[in-house]
Length: 400
Image: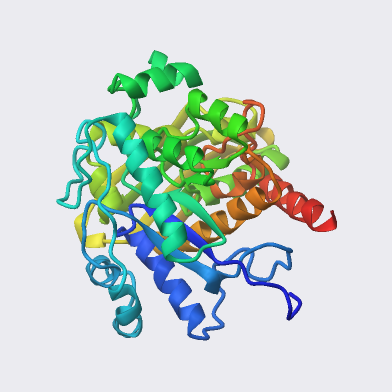
C-alpha cells in the first residue's frame, strides 16, 4: 500500500460479541496491533488487494445477552492461555457489549440479563439501526460490517408467508410475526442501514427469500451461512478427492463433541436440527450421488470446553468391489479455527461494499457450510473450487 494511501478503519458489529469466537478474534487483532507477526490461520494475510482493510484497523463492537467485558468473557471461555489473557486484559476490558435483542422461542438454552427491551419487531430493527449509526460515529469508522456469531436458533417454518417476499416480511414486522426471529431482525436492520451482513451461524437470517430480495434492491452485500471451520472443511477437501479417484462412498459417519456455549445451545433439539441441516448438506452435492448412510452426530460434552473433537469414519468401495475405510480424527480448537475466518469475512464484505456489489456474495462460499448463491442455484461445496472462485473475484477487482 502506498505511504500516502489512507488506511481504512472498519467496524465489525458482532451479534454475540461476548462469545468465544468473537473474543478470540478481538484478542487476535489486539496482538497484531501490538506488533505480532504470527499470521497463522489467516487465509488472506498475504493478499495484496487494493481496498482490503488491514487487520489492525478492525474495531470490535456489538451486542451480547451477557454484559461482561470482553476480557472477562475471554477468561471464562479459556481459549487463550494465561499470558495471552494478561496481555490483552486492558484493551479487551474496555469493551462491553450493547444489550441484545433476544427470543427464548428461538434459542431456549441461552439467556442473559443484558437484553434490549423493545415493544415488537419494528422497534427492535429501529434500535439496532440506531446502534449501528452510533458505532460508526463513535469510532470514526470508514465502514462497518455486521457478523452474526450468536447461538444457533431453531429453524422457522419454511412455509411461513412472512419469509417469502419483501412485502410480506414488512407486514410480518408490523404484526410481530412469530416466524421472524432475532437473527432475521439483525439482518433486516443491517440491510436497512446499508451495512454488509455475514451469517456465521446456521440460523435463518439474510438467506430468507424476503431478505435476499431486500439486499439486492438496497445493494447491500450479504453472505452466509454457518461457518465452515473443522469437520465440514475436511469433508469438502476429502470428498472431491474420493470422487476424482472413483472411490464410491458407501457411508460416512461424523461425530463431534464440544463443551463451549455453542455446544450448550445445541442441546436444544430445535437448534441442533438447524446445525445438522447445514453440516449434512455438502456431501451428496460434491459426490454427485446420495450417500444413504451419511450420519452426523453432535454432542455437548462439558469437560472438553472449546477443544472440539471431530471424528469421521468413511467406508469406500474400490476396484473389483473391495471395501476400505478412512478414519480422520481432528482434535481442534473451535474458536481458534473460526476467529480468523470472521476477520476475513468482515474484510471481504467491506471490500464488496466498496466495489458496489449487493445481494448474495457467492465468492465467499469457501467460508460457509451452506453458502448463499447469486441466482438461487445449488451451491458449490468442493473446497478447491470455492478457493478458485474467491481468488478470481479478488483478482478481477484488483485489475479494474
